Amino acid sequence: MLKRLLDYNDGEEMDLVVMIKNSQLRHTKKDKLYLALSLGDESGEIRANYWDASQRDSDIFSTGTIVEVNGKREEYQGRPQIKIYSLRTVSEQEGYDLEAFIKSAPEKASDMQEEIGKYVFEIMNPTWNRIVRYLLKKWGDRFYEYPAGKSNHHAVRAGLAYHTVSMLRDAKALADNYPQVNRSLLYAGCILHDMGKVLELTGPVATQYTTEGNLVGHLVLIDEQIMMAAKDLKLDLESEDLLLLRHMVLSHHGKFEYGSPKLPALLEAELLHRIDDLDASIYAITNALQHTKPGQFTENIMSQDGRRFYRPKDDPALSNSKKLE
Image 1 (spheres, rainbow, N blue to C red):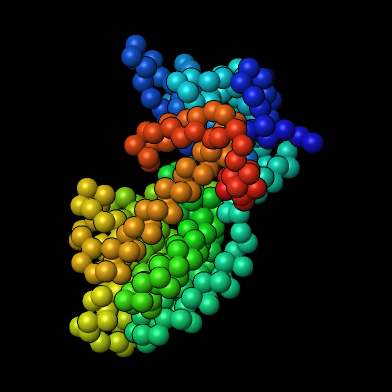
Image 2 (cartoon, rainbow, N blue to C red):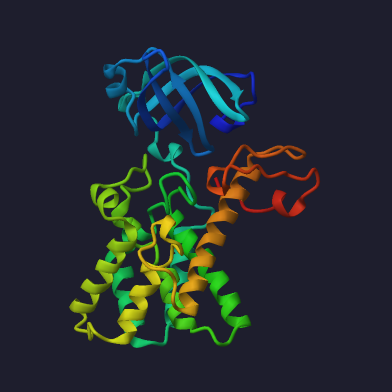
């Protein structure tokens, strides 16, 4: 069986084909150019630096390019990296399947689509139900294909749908425990809150931010989509139902410093923010632990304030859990 990128241990030399997931031309302290790379296949990603680079190298080894890397896995500042000996582009004629370099969510898109459909059926408010159905139909191809982020969490094919399904499961448990929660509003918010990412991101292959993603962002983009859907469906644009739904998506980041234009002012909006943050955190921590040997600490997780988490020597729940990436 051929080794994949994350199958190598520190000190091992490698010669394998990977995809450049991110490439940035940077300057050293001595003002020399180098490429800061993120190399990956379906097993995961590792950083690498390509020293003494040029603008031409930056053009050749750009994001999304498939390359053959010869080098050695090392550890730098507690994180794995590849010391590159040589790097060359791989042509289409060499027969490599693009799918081999793309990580996917641990659940099938078709299964997630079926499950989300069951939650849609439980949205009893006609305004919210019609808008959710309309936008799922409009953006369904992307929604069940796109990642939920460029790198932070659920940054895999169908990661957006997986994040949504996971949040809906949490929402159901909370609504079951707290009968005062408007289940329909919470479910609608879970499904729509990140749907703007189908416009903010380029897709699952070498994911980047689109121009509208950089300039507008997914919170405003999905609010626009909700209003456009309401117009197409000839709904009352001044109804409280529509206003509540818009507040759910516009406030779900929870804090101004997190890019939220409004703070949650509904019980369901507060729950949506906390469920979103919880699921993203659990995913990031679990993913890091799954790539850490028992009895050791993870690398620093930037989304968790740079903290490191310990993987117990005996942890059957983690060992038997689905591999995220």
